[in-house]
Length: 124
Image (cartoon, rainbow, N blue to C red):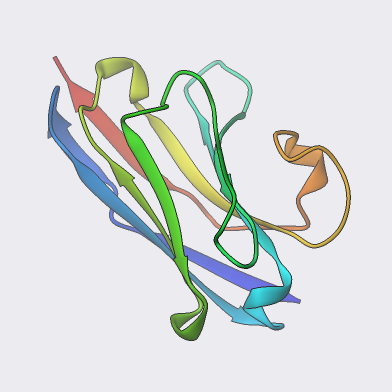
């Protein structure tokens, strides 16, 4: 079992930055690929980024490439999400998720554990 707790969300103006954190507890953190997803009101949960256990491979949705950066510190059981040049369309609840084995990296159903989410609101 893995527990995930996100933090760092908030209200920011367009063009601004936020850094999300997700702290994991329970099973060995380095066993998992970690991902960030987001869900806007009335929309399905969508993949945003992921990072493998050794942090040498990262994956991003096209909509955030060049603006957002995912990283992890296995010694601190933490995954980070630096979001720069934020746009109003980035407004959503952001979720941290952990994936153990198999499945499509961008599919929510591939992930075994989820955090409670943190709200990010970008004003125009």
